[in-house]
Structures are given as C-alpha cells and as structure tokens.
Length: 542
Image 1 (cartoon, rainbow, N blue to C red):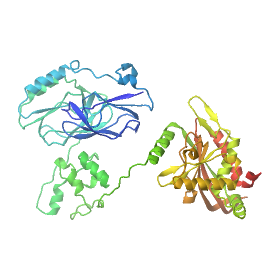
Image 2: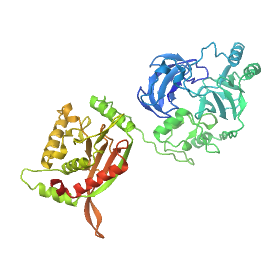
Image 3: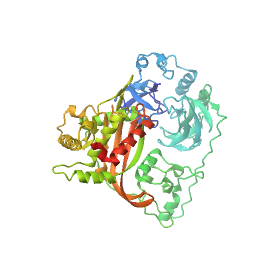
Image 4: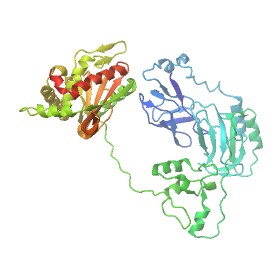
C-alpha cells in the first residue's frame, strides 16, 4: 500500500522547506535508510532519509521548489501501484495517506500558548520545541540529555538523543546561549512542538515562559520503557605544564563508562570515510566530545605515553564521470526489471568433461572445421530444451507460452556492456553451423553492426565466462526467457572414478530459473538431460 511522505520539520523553527536535490527519481527502488533528498530548512541543508521501503511513485516538490511542513513531498509504494486517487485528494486510496489539515483548523491550545509565550519572551531567549524528526513522528521521548541546565550551548552542539517512532536520533541545537530550562526529563514523552528546552542569556528568569508552555504540552511519563541510563561526561584533567604531554592529558577521552562515544555527526562521518576508530581519538570539544578538527588532525604520531592511533593514508581523491550510453541504460533497465519481477532461483551442477574434450579434439581434426566448447553447450541446450519445453517458456500476466521452436541467445561482451544475439532454430543446426553463426554474430556485436532482428526472439540464453577463468557464477534471466545457463571454466583437478582418485576435468554450470514458469524439479530434469549430452557429446550426432 502506498505511503505519503510529507515535508518533515527538520528544525524546531522550521515552517517550510526547499528541496535542494533529489537523490532518488520516480521509479527508483527505495530501501529504509536511503537518502531521499537534501532539504534546505531555515537553518541548514540536511539529508532526509526514507523510513519506508518500496518504489518512488511520485515526487510532489521539484528541486528548487518550496513547500510548507507536512505538505506532500513524495509517495512510496509498490511498483505500478495506482496512486491517482491520492493525487486527486481522495482519502480512500490509502489509510495511511492523510490529507494535511488546514492551518486554521490545526491551531491548538499549545500553539496559542506558544504564541503568547513568544510575545513575552525576554530578550535573547529562544524556546526549543520537540522537533519532528521523521515524516510520521507525532511525539518523541527524550532518551538522553547531553547538556544540563546551566551549560553553555553552541550552535551545532548535540542537545539530546530523542527516540522517535522510527529510531533514536541526535538532536542538535541551532542556537547559542545557556541552557536555562529543560521541559522534559529523560524517559518522558511529549507531542511534536511541545516545550523541550529554553536557551538564552545566562541568569535570565524564564519561569513564566516555561509555565505557559507546560499547560498544554502533552508531556507524559513513559512508564513501560526503562529510563535511559544517564551518561556522565568525564571531567577534564588538570593541566600541570605546557608540554605536549600535558596537552594530550588535557584532551579527554571520547568514550564514556558504558562504551558510548561522544562525537559530532560530522566527526563521525569523516571518521567513517577515513577508517578511523573514534575510540582512539582524543576529543577537544566540550566534555571531551570529538569534533571535526580532532578527526582531521588524527595521525599515527603520538606524544610520549600516549597511544598510537590507526594509520590514515593521505592523498588526492580523483574520479571521472562517464555519461551512461543508451545501451548501458537499456541494459540497466532490462536487468533491473528482470531481477525484481522474476522470482529467481539457482541450480548448480558439475559435469565431467573428459569425453567432451576428446570429442572436440577429434571433431576439430576434420579439415576446415573448428568448434568451441561453447558451441557444444549451445547445441546440447537446444536438444535438451526440445525435451523440456517448460524451460523454453515465457511468462505473461494471463498465460504461459511453451515455445516449440528453440532460439538460443548467446551473451556477448562489448565495450558498452552486453548484447545477446540469437542463434535461431539451434536444435536444427549442426555444430559447425552453430560455431559459424556464433562467430558471425559476435563479430557484428563488437563492431556494432547487429540489427534489432538479430537480437530478438530468444527462448533461452547461454552466458559463458569460462574463457576468463571464472569457475562458477550466476546470471540474471534475460526476459522474456524463463531461464539462463551460466557456464564456467573447465578445471583440471582430482576426481573419484571407480573408487580411485584420478586427475579429471570438470565444468560447473548454474541454471537461473523463473519460479513462475519453471519449478525446481523441472529445472533439475532439464539439467539431467543436458548432462547426458555434454558428458557424451557423440549422442548429439545421432
């Protein structure tokens, strides 16, 4: 069922937001935690992540456009789902899609109190309310306060960790000043926009402001959830001299007694990118918090008596953007559609290739004749498919088509990607004819001379990476085919024959099947027939 994603309130004073950039486009698959867009608030440009999974069906605000908090931002649902009722304002389309109430109708007693309080605020005093940290958040619980009343707060400092309906998230301050009042204790919950804290000049009396907000804040104790353990920041050590060692002593460890690391979000991001263990970094921020400069300046060099950190390589990042070709776009679209619409499963086998090796050697001794192992596989597949038409089938919404003809698609690598020219009526062609056809089609593919007709109509596909030394792999089905065979390298290794360990040659193959058309037993029976032909190729000549 489709989910409406509204413009979130990403700061306590945010009334509207501007979409700076979309990181997903309509039709893209969205996973929980993926960044949907970058949204510019009244404070900063912030990443907004999805709390839902599905396909991005609709974008309500284009890049550069601005809209109010709670207005339609996007719709996520099942691929192909009809959302016309939602876009037309029909609430019956989804129980979870609620029409945003009019501003006049949503004015609550809390907002009235907020307005009254804002008119009477002492100079420099800022009221911080419970933010909406997810698109569906209605109330939040204070898990941990990282500041206490009387502490100095700088813009960007983490005030508290707030538990939403989705996750526990850090909430940073967008103001500087002194924390004068805390509206919710650890473990307490309140509705979005209720009083969270008051920041202002030190010593300012804010009792009237706090009482006005508390009347209808909706704060309530969360009895079921255990109160979050309060983390006491370690105290700074006394500086005894001006040496480098004393400077290291002045820096406080960023780890608390319960293992939590105090670090700014930006510091965490930089540390992750550089592969730095934050527990090894000394924090110079307030209460030993690791800040951006601590991570950037962290090296293996350490003063006497201090621990040596992880080596961080330095260098210049370099990259090249290559515009996707039309072929690459077409391949991406087709394979993505196949992978996410056809329920793939895989059957793997290993064939004895001793007879096939001898057969090919004898066959190629005929003047002006040369066949490859791939030609043997294509011919064997064509004959086996005639006996197992369900593997040679196609799936449609209202029917399954069993093909009586056999057209084998042969995957060919080209500079721009991959093409699949088709050997038509492969079961009726001889091995030399198949070899000549594959050689001709592969040459056309590499020279970009293939016609659309030469790439259409396959009923089954063979993909061979054995010539690249790949022993085993799986492929994505080339729809509308129901199966694709992945062919690996011929490997010389010890095998058991007649109870004795001898040197043998084997080849691994993997059959990817669409479970809508090919059941497991059907696929297995096809591979048994294929095994008979490949391990005894002379039977293909009968």
